[in-house]
Image (cartoon, rainbow, N blue to C red):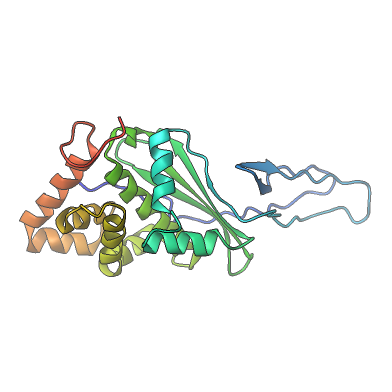
Length: 248
């Protein structure tokens, strides 16, 4: 099936501004520094009343690409490049690249093979005035095509934006992607890869949406097209696939 990225994109949002018991040291709020996160320690100095809460402190807005693998890292940079004619690039840079309170982090981890990426949000821009989102890309994708990696990044960045907008729930977000954003995701891929056919871009834009009604309708109404989409995704994803370009 198409890649199942997006887990965590619509999950429960935790609060990055934690409560501090009086007299204790707070170490789980973070401020962003040059390409790293540093805990803010707040120690009760004996004043009265003792501190009970802390607001998250952001030194500077950050879109932080913390990925170590050179191929995955390069594709993150290219997928959100400011000069790209891309919906994904526009929303990432306008929301997370301009605000002092909204930050986006890219990480990598060895996830299960069926999960290409996930999104972990913290905060609520509406009620807390702060929002951080961490996108984790499966390190196993470093053998996939660069086109497939880009599709995963675009998918997860869209999750981050939807959560920022208050559209919660992975299923709800996937439903909107499948019904309202399919062409947009396809356009973003072809902006990055001008030689990609409409058919391939459309197929990759279906990644992660196999539980939606739109996909189920496609399977029922046009099973041949659905099978073609699965086949195209496999050829872009597999290390020995015959579609796309690979870093390794």
